[in-house]
Structures are given as C-alpha cells and as structure tokens.
Image (cartoon, rainbow, N blue to C red; front, side, top):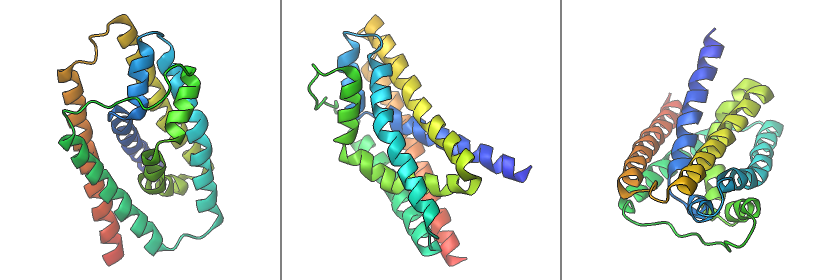
Length: 210
C-alpha cells in the first residue's frame, strides 16, 4: 500500500512539474501560437513532433541510469543541480514576465516538423532533461520499467493536451492569449518551479547529511 501511495505522490509531482514546464512560455509555445492562427490541429501536430524527439531521449536516460549503479553522491548532486535550475527558471520567468517569446523557426514548415526542429534546437530542453528530467527519472526508476513508462506517458500527455487545447482556442479566437491570462499562468509556474526546486535541493542536502 505504501508503495502505491508513493507512486501516486510521485505521479502528482510529475504532473505538476510537467504542467508548469509546458505552461512556461518558450520557443515551442511561441511556434504553437503562430501556427494555430492558421490551423486548429497545429498544437497536436507540434506536440507529436516534440514527442518524437523527447521519447527517445527519456528512454535513453532511463536505460543509461539502469545499466549502472549510480553512486548516491551523484544522485544527490543531480538533485541539487536540478533543484537549483528549477528555482533559477522560476526566478527568470518572473523577471521576464512582461516579455513576449518569439518563434525562432521557419513557420512555413509542417507543424510536426516545426515541433521536432524547435525541440531539438532548444538547448534549454536538453539542459532540462540532463538535470530536472534526470532527477525525475531517478525517482521513476524506483518503480521499474512500467512505472517509468507511465511517467513518460503522463509527461508527454500533459504537453499534448496543453498545446492541442491552446491551438484550438487561438484558432477560434485570436484574443485568447491575453496579458492577464499569460501573467496568471506565469505566476503559477514560478510558484511551482521555486517550490519544487527548493524541495529537491532540500531533500538532496538532507540525504547527504543524514
């Protein structure tokens, strides 16, 4: 029973962190806004393109971590770095809360291709998975391959639902992404990132000192 409870709590944290990550304005979201003005399925296709790059990376990290016995000091270090990055991202998002993200991609590309290219060319995406993402995968590894697979599916499904819904809303009404809406979402993301980042750093330091 405790194992199942721990798994549900872990999934809840994954859901919140993934939701905050996808809600945070970035290159992929900027591309979605631009593409959605012409196609209501742009968000879904962009999310699929994103997943084509993201799924192999997630499973690669999981397989590498599964092949080797990861020293506790390394796990603690990843947790501290990942937590610090989350706090930093939260503070940066708050500092740039009035700035608009620009789409740095050829918008004539197919939406799925745009999703793949924007994801692969985003250095922040790789950094996220090498730190915050790796911390989550280390936690998911406790629940085995099935637990990790559920984690990976939930993480991507959050992306898919958000980009799909946003694209539909923007296609229906160009006024959906208002300043007040964007500000509210940004502040929610800031709170979640700083909260979980502080928790990751604190729990990692505690396990190091214990």
